[in-house]
Image (cartoon, rainbow over the protein chains, first blue to last red):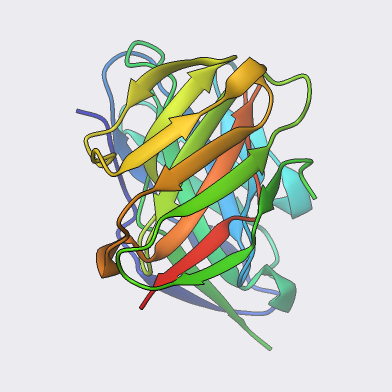
Length: 114
Length: 110
């Protein structure tokens, strides 16, 4: 079965420091991987995705993520955090062989401390 | 703004009442999805359409839930005889390679 794990409920980072939000996945076949961000009382906003190609994917707002097949991970990173990055972040996976639906992790709340 | 709109944004209803939500997708997107998100959880897949055809339904979609997408344009999600456990955010998304989400409808069942 497809699954996504975000092991940290919350991550605290000082403004200006690098940030990492962790994600591991389990899926049959080659995965499509996604990161979304959710601000209070808003829908999900797409940040970036990995389908194939370069393992380092760059996305919106200076975020990037690294696909690691051997570790089945897709961690979200940013070199220098901003207070405005504080939000709820969701990792998601889709297996093309299992239909088109996306399976989401539980989310990680990111707090950037001024 | 992703171009996906949902109405209403908020709905408060009493237990046992029926409610209907609407999603208007990005016009050129053929696939439309419904998800449910409860507090502290990620969105959970409910169902999806390819044009007007409903192709997959989650086990979460009990027989009190029905979704339609007439003419392959907007979609509606109806919940009959609402229960307190139905309180959640209902999200719609449309897809062309990447799923783009609407702002959601927050349902509160009293």
